[in-house]
Amino acid sequence: LYCHRDVLGDVEMVNIADVTCGVGNVFHNKGAIGVYLKMKRLQKNGVAKSSRMLFVTGHLAAHVHNVDARNDDFKRIISGLEAQAPARFLRPNRNPDGSPSECE
Image (cartoon, rainbow, N blue to C red; front, top):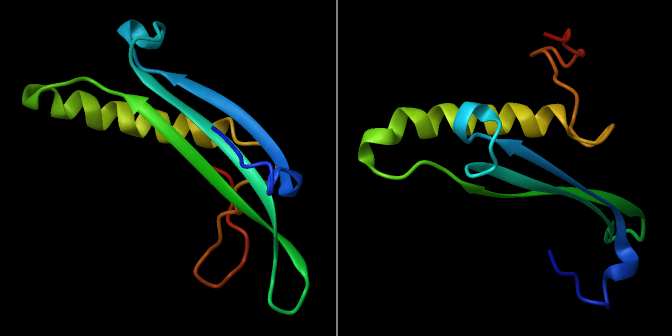
């Protein structure tokens, strides 16, 4: 991930995580890497806030007959990246009434 020097000072946090989906979910021949990025942004009223972004790249099983394997790997990747997210990076889960939900 590259950042232009003009905005480098606005980068607040960078974290990297990986999820393996290769043979036995151990080998790194398949899987994904996620880059968690938090940057300052200036609102129209002059107040600085933070934007959180997650960039993901992956290498999954090829061919039509591996659709189920790809779908399973996708779920594993999402779950793994969510579990490895930096503290307070993800928004807390909310119930329909807006109250915080219980952890699963």
